[in-house]
Structure formats: C-alpha cells, structure tokens
Length: 156
Ligand code: FES
Ligand code: FES
Image 1 (spheres, rainbow, N blue to C red):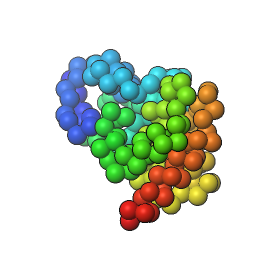
Image 2: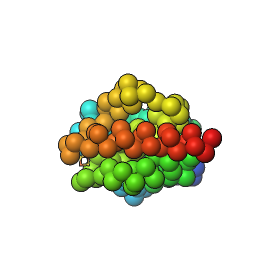
Image 3: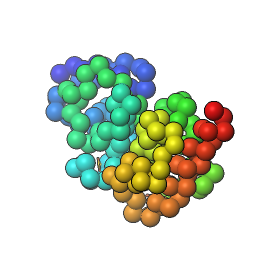
Image 4: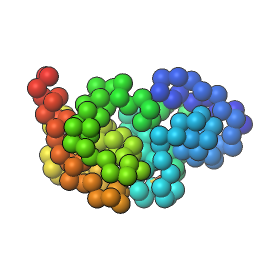
C-alpha cells in the first residue's frame, strides 16, 4: 500500500503494509539508519523520533498511524534550535560511549529542552527515564542537558 509520510520536512512515498513499524520504513525503505533498533517493544528508547515534536518510539508506531504528521529523525534534529544546543553539549561533555543508544537519547533530550528550557533534575529524570544506556552514560547526559539549557539562557 502506498503512504506519503513527511520526514525531516520532505514528503516520501513508500509502498509497505500499513502495520509496518515506522522504524523499518525509516531504516530499510528510506535508508535513514541513524534511528536504532533495540528492543522492538517500546522499552529502550533507541528508536526514538519526533512526531509533531513529541518523542515517539518508532518501533511500535505503525506507518498507517503517522498520517500527515511531521516526523523528525536524528539526521535532521541538528537543524532545530534545541537540537543544535543538545548536540553541541553532547560533544562538549563527551557523552557518547559505544553510541548505540545515543540518537534516541538526543531525540528525547531535544524534545525536553524544546518544551522546557529550564528543566529541573526531576524533569530530566522524567523525560529521559525511557531511554536505556547499557554503557551508563546517564551522568554525562544530565550534565549535557544542563549545559544546553544554560547556553539557551545565555543566548536568551
Ligand atoms: S527499539 Fe523501540 S523502544 Fe526499544
Ligand atoms: S552509549 Fe553505549 S548504550 Fe548508551
């Protein structure tokens, strides 16, 4: 079945079954492999993308539920103001270890910062609790989110 989905501000026509997870469409059909497969059950956060700005587990999001929504992936998040600040802070704080979970972490962190420019520790814990990191980069993730929030403050 043909679907037209909006990914990173571009329309894409894809011919897949309606129950195909968005994650597989992104990776296997559109070749956007920055979004990762971890658990396939909405438990790890590796597959997180934004749908109309909201962090969403693409492994359990069927393509027929996406409709006209705007999908944003790790490939384009740096083009957003919050995404650019988060990615800068990620580099400054050397957050990444193996890297596998990190695109999902960045997508969740960016959604947090975009909606809440001054997140408290509790806000950060709440927003990031669904993103698992087997390398245990949680402390640096929190530091990077705080740095990104401060840089947002300094620039007004
Ligand atoms: S792969 Fe989607 S939450 Fe783990
Ligand atoms: S950096 Fe390795 S799983 Fe998170």
